[in-house]
Image (tube, rainbow, N blue to C red; front, top):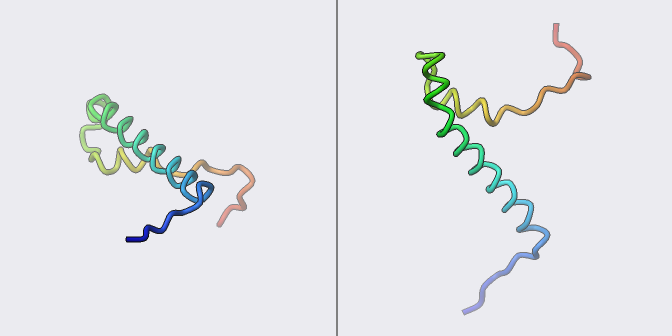
Length: 64
């Protein structure tokens, strides 16, 4: 049986991305009770998504 092995430089960035996603998810789980206490109508999904919103760039042109 032959296995296809990816070079380390290809696997490593993906591994780091997965670790970051796991970290964000666990932070969301941990902080959700405090957030829902302040905002009772917020769902866990909404709270979780706030951890994955890309940073806003200040130099981005406005769409007005």
